[in-house]
Length: 101
Image (tube, rainbow, N blue to C red; front, side, top):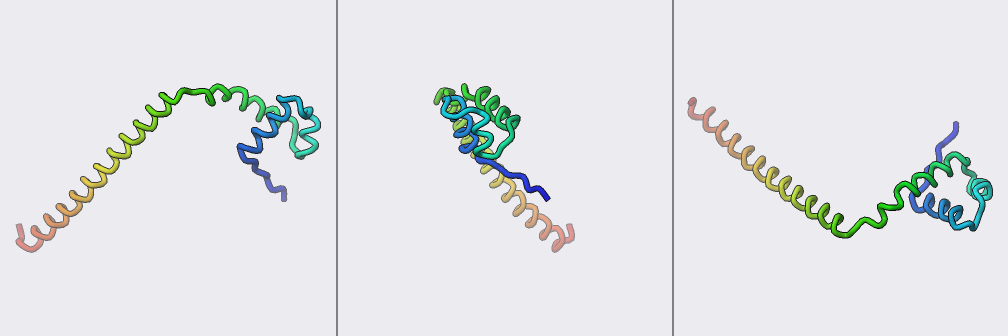
């Protein structure tokens, strides 16, 4: 039974950079790491398509982090409200069963 190998993002980047820098040819790289050329081509395409993401501004990242903090605060408030409602519901249920109302 063939077991699929998995490669870390760091490994993929290293392999593609070896090709792009001209240190090794694609054929050499495929032989050395025992990977197929179409897989190497896919990694190369992915790296080149996403290379611009490395240069995204810190402003965008800080906006995203602020949004995450805002959403985490909202989740915390909702969890607190849910806990309060559960306690109120249990009190209401116990009173109505005791008093018959």
